[in-house]
Amino acid sequence: MTTLTSEQAQKVNNTGDRIGEMFVEQGVSTSQLRKVYGEIKQAENEFKFEDSPEQAKRTLLLLKPSTYAAARKENMSVVNKKISNLIDPVIKNNSSEEMELFFRLMEAIVAYHAYYDNKKGDS
Figure 1: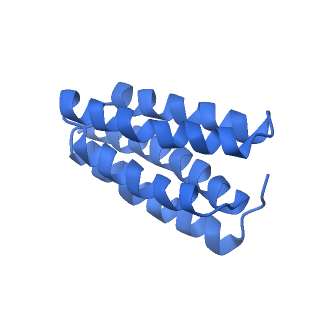
Figure 2 (figure 1 turned 60 degrees about the vertical axis):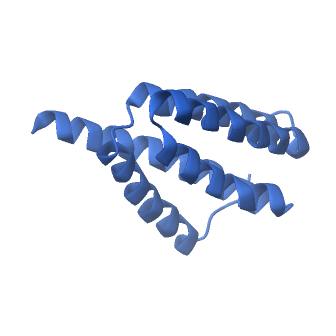
């Protein structure tokens, strides 16, 4: 596992906050986001625990069509577009650091989505 620099951690935090809030504003439900995140966690487990970065990249690559299909059915086009744009550099660059940043960013997005979704419910 790669240790993030302070700058990388700050960027992950800020980007996760922005995207998580945007997903709430676009009406993405927690269950919709969790479904996608579950597949991302599978890739993360392949990367970290099975020591198989190539399999993790294949899992992420296969996530793109499933988010596209979900976007067509469940009005999740914003999630499809964002996640696809985040996956592309991970697939393109053969870098463990890039993959680790992606996993941390997705974790932050889900956390901030939950925060803003709860905050919206309290209003």
